[in-house]
Length: 321
Ligand code: TXA
Ligand code: MG
Image (cartoon, rainbow, N blue to C red; front, side, top):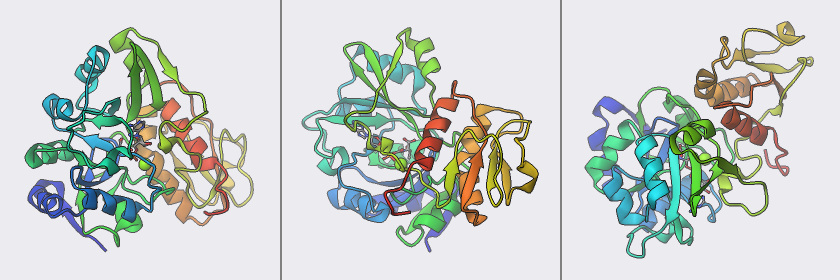
């Protein structure tokens, strides 16, 4: 298993891993990231190796400040406004890649765009010390539930990375929102920690959604966030033998008979629900129930990202669970 250090004394150890071209798991405000030097192709390849991720998935380049962002990508007026409003924070901006960006092409998977994000917390401080971008997908094996605690990451990836920096449970709990700006239009490629409503309030521009078609953000592949158990969304009752993922103060019929039961937020708070989402899914998965009934979660605000992740977790798995 990996060596686990606390965030308080993890900076030097994490820097040493990055400098040596190895991966290191670091906390961000959204989820844990499996980080490596974005300029070092071998280091980035280790990320794919550890995750068992299809190579065509581009990664997010995490930056410390606007200057670092401008060194790798071109931020136009609207992306600049979004960065001003939400960085550091859970918003990723897909922008044109600079020719001399210095990133390994593995990071962008050969695209002429790059996904940029300025995280909060330990990761932010680490990148500042490191002095150049780090690539960091969510710290989970491809297709598995995203890690929001060091223990969950250790169980999933501990034998595939040398060091995990423990910063406690990640406060946001779902990945960043990904948007692309096209001629003043804002297209949401993945819902996440910043809501469409917040983006609209900050910019005055209506956020557009992508509707199926070509894979623009492969994180949107169905079954990307799959627990082992099956998931029944918007359940109206708990079936015999099922576990229950509850939401809010009121229970659906059959809840008392659930094999295991956890509430995303007893008060119906979507922010708390997002923070609990992946850890609760993992815990219910461990109960051994073949299926998890999920109570309806509202679709407004952060509920959009929560329902998106639940729908992916509920999707058929093409046979490989
Ligand atoms: O909150 C987060 O964003 C976390 C933490 C660790 O920062 N990171 C994360 O990374 O979720 P990852 O690699 O699991 O998801 C990145 C998503 C992928 O779905 C990828 O396809 C998309 O970003 N992406 C990356 N570059 C892109 C690009 N140039 N155009 C469109 N989508 C892109
Ligand atoms: Mg991911």
